[in-house]
Length: 511
Image 1 (cartoon, rainbow, N blue to C red):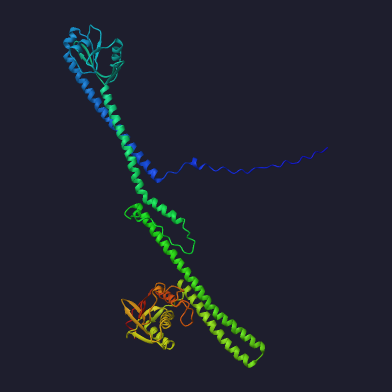
Image 2 (tube, rainbow, N blue to C red):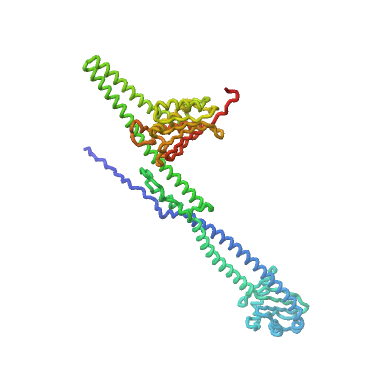
């Protein structure tokens, strides 16, 4: 009989791995806490070392003074008690006849008598030593000098033995006063050290906290800036480190000043990006309109030609086809000009499109004015040039385009009857071209962005006045590529475009 055993399904529960307890990891120490603990710890160590060294030195001084006092007392006592020793008096009797200061110990031994000892108490009474106490004193006398003996119920004494013709004299002085002085000194040092450390900790905490306040202001400002929605269209960063916390005369204040400078640059970059996006949108709208119009014309005339061909009217078809092809060609040229302008700007940005040679800027100005007169017969064109040609190293074709763009700009945006003056001169080693007109001037709102790409002096899209906004930007790109500058000054009745280019010295041998 075969039994079928169903396999037991093994189920494993994927329990999540417990995350480590963040609280158990301990809160990281702040810079302020580390500085306070470091300063107080090092200062405490130094003060403890100073206290120990001071106590050791002063304790040694007191011990030396006690040793000297015991030695002198032993010599003096041995010399003054010879009569008492000869009479066989005990130490207690001797101290009674010759009173000493409290804490004074005397032990004597004559050749024929037993050793006796006595000590002067705090109340100036004299107490005799017992046999056991005398034995402890005798044992201590066998040690190394200086001799320090501890006697039960009496205390610790610094002793000194002095031989005498009548016997042996041992004099001792209590060390209690020295020990009390050392204890008072250690207590005083400890209290002063503890108090000083507390004051040091408070002063250090206040000083460090005040010193790091600018750094906290920097961190708070950076945190607020990090929460700003910088991905939106219009963004302005108004958060700044307070001026009181950004003092460049301090190290931490320099960090605040640097952050403020960085935020200024970022704000300017965001504003520039927004302006570029707005100009790009405007350009896309303008370019779309400019391209849509010729494309619509091309499509319309193409359909007209196809319709005429389908009706098979030979004479009319030929005339319609010719007219349509002419319009198609004109609109194609218009689109080609726009695309070539954009391509020129891109190539100039890459450092291309320039063919250098010797260029007579005076001749270019004469030719450009000659071309402008037929295009603007209602304007008055004036040339102001010297007898000597102004030569530079550059691309003649592109520089001619700069002058032509400036003259076209003056013709397009000024009414008939305006006088346009073109001047060429050499000033301070530079070739200067000026185009001046006495027209109505430039709108101040457009003056700062006049040379930007896609900027239009006329917001309309009229074919007579409204352009794509690339003429002056192309002029600036060409001038920049030649290492020069282009600028404008404008008030009503007085507008001047000035181009400065590095002048090429005239060859003395040239005609």
